[in-house]
Image (tube, rainbow, N blue to C red):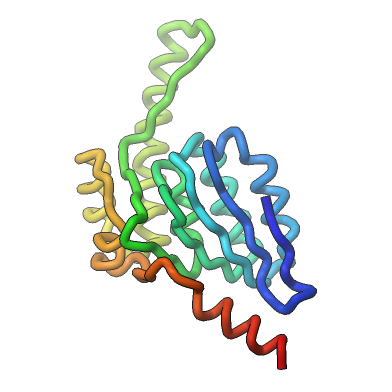
Length: 186
């Protein structure tokens, strides 16, 4: 899940790959391994997962004051957008893709009508809160997020960068990592 480069002079590197619900425990522990206020790089290739797992990851990044750089190495969709938006610096390539959509829920248990109605009410509220938080973290208008969510929109890296929500990078060595390596060799 993570690679600690502090002894070599670089930031801790973490990967958030796959369903964040299935990987939430490992991802949380990896974030807790980063000292509060320290720098880390989080590489994303995730279709999303539980909004609660997403909120937990974003909360750890924010509450611990991590100087996180998020890099979309492939996909960063649905719930994975929240921890990505919590990163202070966000990098995307021309091939990155992000899916914005309505919150989905399902239950594998038998639930009665009253429980189902409460879940529906709660998820409507949760979706509104998540959209507002995404807009706040990205530093954009709520309408931008809502427009993408309403259309279940796949947003490309260049589109996200054009909206001012991330930096567009090429698929080549990250210059800030190369500078750190060069500084260690001297």
